[in-house]
Image 1 (spheres, rainbow, N blue to C red):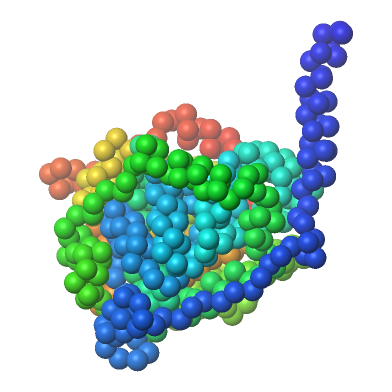
Image 2: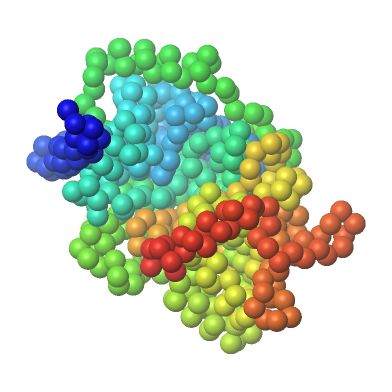
Length: 533
């Protein structure tokens, strides 16, 4: 074998493998899929959670809310609901990791199913690489059913092989379900920005996310159940076994699950603090006392239709997605109605032409706009920062107040938790309009959320909840971020912060990052996808 042939062989073999794998990247035909329709079980006073919810409701038509700013409290709330459930648990998540948090919650779901609770678990399939044995073990439990949104039919061992084996259907698999929802006994729910993984609950060693959820009970929960069913029974959702046939009998799979989720492999979650930054005790404690301190309000919920994927695959991705049920449509409509102030947080902020037009319209009417996003040092997606930085000067020249989360300053913010040596990054997607309307959801203000993801969001009419949200945002801005401004020349960006003495300090370069990273991104900018810019 000549040296040149020897060098080219790996590439040739790789090419053949790609062709072979791409051929198996098709989903099974609907005629071969046993997809039985099922529907939510409504709240009942026959369950403990149902009784607490009914006894707490001050007036028909209202929904009770509690913000969950602390990761340990947000996880403890989910665990508490799962442990107290008596009839049904419905979970919908973009990511459920095979880590301490994911395994512990899955084990809690298994235990609930063992008590006779019906468990429906709906997961986006993107980040489930290598988790098939864990999921098969959970699905082998009676009363548990797992379904996958827009799944990868082969190459499931890693993210790379998944995409390689789906090259022929890449336009399909790039569309993902980004929703996050947890419903217990049809009576109580948790919705917001957190996925199920260590980094969303301050348990990761490298990066932890600043995030926010809302505990929900009352009139909105049946609507959330309807939205869950809309996805659960969608043709874009497949039963786990239609994609991953069991490799062993149920008893063997259950035994493997028991081992994988045992204390030897799974660290239990931490106990939440006695009170959070808003002064509330953990919801798990209040459930023990059969009472929950809540803010009651009129609210509505939206989720992008699951068939949004079909519209995008049909070549409409270049057109505005104007479905009146879509989250982005409703967010933009409410932003346009602002009279005085918009305060918004988004980890990925790429307003695009449409977003800039909305900001210009608001600023022309004298509406204040305050934005908080990730700095280059904080973001976990540096390429997204390329799209964002194209709009910074434009927004500042319009008079937008712009803040960027600093991973070093975030460690000083007590409301965010104790980061230790880990890196802090913003993940919350929220808005407060005119200090009365609150948005909490899964939608980033970027093109991906509009064009490739399905999203979910809550809209809450409550000045009291808005005050609490603004208090959290103010803590983030003052203690954990840099404020941007333009220098006297009108072109140079400056990042402002307060030193330990309370004096304002300004820098003319991206803070907390190396010069090499800035140069590298500058080199990549001309090649960034148009949709980022």
